[in-house]
Length: 155
Image 1 (cartoon, rainbow, N blue to C red):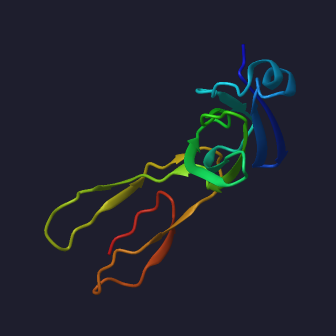
Image 2: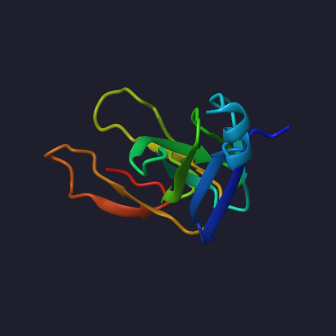
Image 3: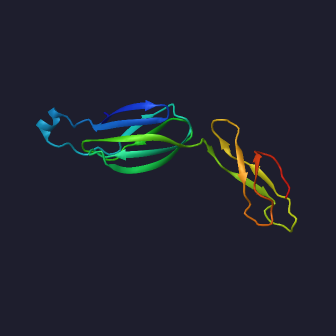
């Protein structure tokens, strides 16, 4: 049987929610006193844009309790609620673009002049046309240039 109840309010990829120990109600309090803390509660969220999200947890006094950064690859996930005796709140906000930047270079060593092929192995989760700013941080190289993905350039 679930030990938490949760309610959420959503606008696009911004979610605010409230959760409560299911035993924290007037009848339980009258008959049993303060309930035991709930551990391991999960809150399911779905249909989000894949990417990074910032999750803020607030305790029952509306004070920031903790912050997490979580990568959501497929748009659905379970929030692991913190231990709670009474209630708490959370906020989930889209934090970063939906891709995992990854490049390879070949060859990685050699004598000058060295022609290096950079390959974009970035994982794109939502399509789109991306550009990259290359800054090789070397004084004798031409100023940084912007290149579309998978283009080859020889210095």
